[in-house]
Image 1 (cartoon, helix red, strand yellow):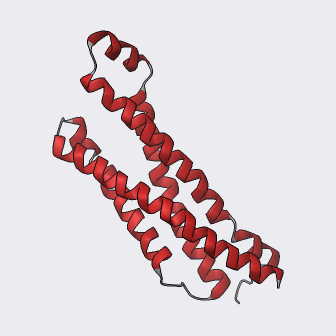
Image 2 (tube, one colour):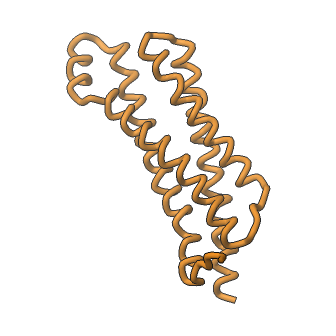
Length: 158
């Protein structure tokens, strides 16, 4: 007995992934801001450092990063699942491959946190570099995702 998903759910479910990804792009930019503020603490004078520490930038950056990691992995799996449910296949192309790459980048970036907490500057520099690449891919994904979304809307309208 095959479970058939009703057409309205199949249709509207296609908009969940793009919506989540746009929210995550915003969270990514916010996490970048928090990370930059957190890094200022290390080089600030004593008074400035005291003021910056009160704002919990490091802790907030870590929390946003954790949320971002979880939701990006789930969002990417969800996007692939919805595509497969609606089309019976995945479309292997630049959008999918970049999304899988982004998932790998964020996982590796998060795995560096324990080393960064011990003061490992190589881990910190790698974390920053991976996240800059991740943000660049994310921006490109937003554009290519909107092109895909436009095709979906065109198909719904025809």
